[in-house]
Image 1 (cartoon, one colour):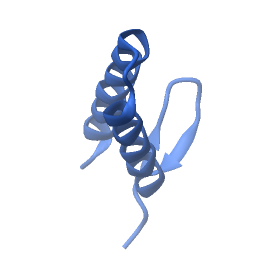
Image 2 (tube, rainbow, N blue to C red):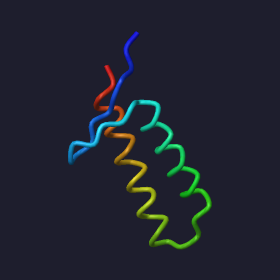
Image 3 (spheres, rainbow, N blue to C red):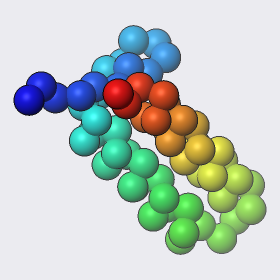
Image 4 (cartoon, rainbow, N blue to C red):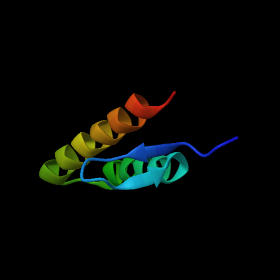
Length: 58
């Protein structure tokens, strides 16, 4: 079984596991954030990461 990868804009390539770990870390940070501006940025980043990961799964 080969390892799945996620290619991000700019040419960065991460394994699916690494990308999912990033998503998990952003989710945890968002749960802890109280400042509305930063919370909105984290939620936006979380959504973007989810879309990047899901669009490349097959």
